[in-house]
Image (cartoon, rainbow, N blue to C red; front, side):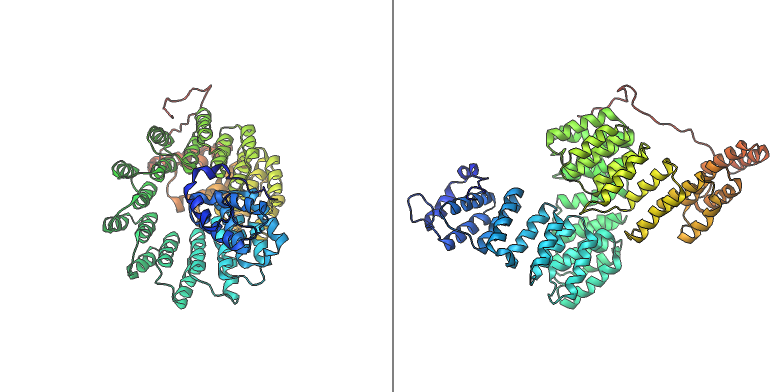
Length: 596
């Protein structure tokens, strides 16, 4: 075991001055190595190295030399070595340290175990982190916070909140870090009432005047859509930092309160890049994107997030060609592209089904070393799927060493999009067996779509739907309901649909009634179609789709008088059928536009 931590030995030459000076304080030999078993000296040395960021590699090197000279680290040294492995991303070295900790009996040390929890959370090994936490005899609030914040950073917001509730019912008192992690989870899940309850606890514990806590409250209220509460917290703060200002700008901009966002932006003492980005994000999403472009061109120090806001804004507005143009400009500038840049532009390319462009962007991700990123990898899977290249999509899926739920949903959605229902069900069953992941509403939507494509029975689809609601506690959406309606159309049972729509609470949702109208087109039930058409017009106003659909279904069954009546209504109400258009890539020929 003496040489297991030699990673970083080559780095020793890069930072010779300070380590040698530190070493001389503890050395009793001409080699500069501390005396055998001088654990206290090694503790000070390792701690000093760890606190000097770039020299974390040296902590690992010197630990190896420590073993060579017969010394063994104590718990304090172990904490610093684990932190060094965490900061440097040395996963295998961290595992070996964990083995030594088990052999040496340090596992009962709460500080050592907490450091290990942080290590495993860094690598998203949430199950290993949780097992360690459970084994701590008396976890401290730091241990609780490490696990809760780890869940939040890994995207397991519900688990983080369940753990926070357990903390509150334990004998350990929550602190400001506990509250900020819980507030972050509430914001991500838009749980306003729970967020307000936590706010009450914060006041009760007397930490509401902490700038960090107040900033998190503003962020939580903003993400939950409660702008009034966010502004109230901001107004009551005595001390404000740049994060405070950026949080309130983001809270107003995200909720379409662009005038207030501008007001806070101009009131901010020293605007920074984040301030500009938050304002730009709001305008790009809800305002005139050309205004956001103007801000980008005039802001002092735009970064990759600034450019990403514009690219994402164009993609979300179905202006993928404009997004590609900006991507090309960003590529020509000195701005470093990141994983979010590529995921956004790949989403735009997927909407165009432009395979050649997608392959070029894939090459760019290889150049930047981002093809192994979960975010980029998932976007590549989605792009290849929507271009009909499922073999490449599956290859990309298998090549990713780490996969999250977005990755799984991308490949499942790809097969559903391309009509391979058997593969959808196979992947769904594999996902159910994963330890750290479980299906969500999007997963089940793809499964229901596969049921439609494969013309499975309504009973089988209903079993999946019930499992979603009962086993996974996933809320039913209009999209799930619409998938069931399409299945009813295939089986000729749309007569049951109106009752189901009312029972599920979607009677005022126009998209659901449009789905029922489409289902009637499959089975040819004119009576139910007339009911659905009337509801769509009532809820969404005069829509040319409804009139054209009813005209076609009447014509199919020779009801020419009704066809004439529908067309007369269209003339009276000035409803026009718009000509549709689309474009696809044919033999690598497409509209010219420079990408790189």
